[in-house]
Amino acid sequence: MSTSTAWIVLLIAGILEFVWATGLKYSEGFTKLWPSVFTLITMGISFYLLSLSMKVLPVGVSYTVWTGIGAVGAIVIGVLVFKEPLSLMKLVFLGMIVGGILGLKFVES
Image (cartoon, rainbow, N blue to C red):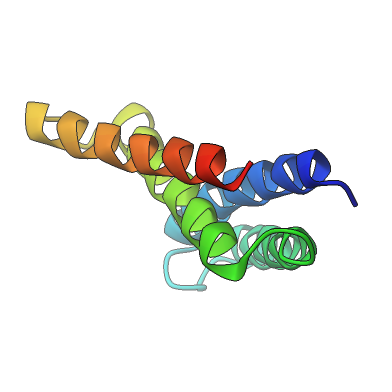
C-alpha cells in the first residue's frame, strides 16, 4: 500500500470512528439490538482500516489522526443531530484539533 492510499484508508477509518460513536449513542448502552449490531460492525471495520494504515504510517500519527477525525466528527454530529450547544470556544478548540491533524499529515508526507 502506498502512503497516499494509507492516508485515504486512515481517513475512512476516522470517519467510521464517529459513525460508530453515533451508533453507540443510539444503542443506549447496548440495550437496543440493531443499533448495537451496527455499532460493533462499524467499530470493527474502523479498527481494521486503522490497522491497515499503520502498516505504512507511524503508529503515533495514525492513532492521533484517527482519534482527531473521530472527535471532530462526533462534535459535529452532536451539534447537528443531537442539538448539542456549540460555543465560540468549542469552535476554537475544534480548529486546534483540525490544525493538529493537518499538521501531522503535512509533517509526515
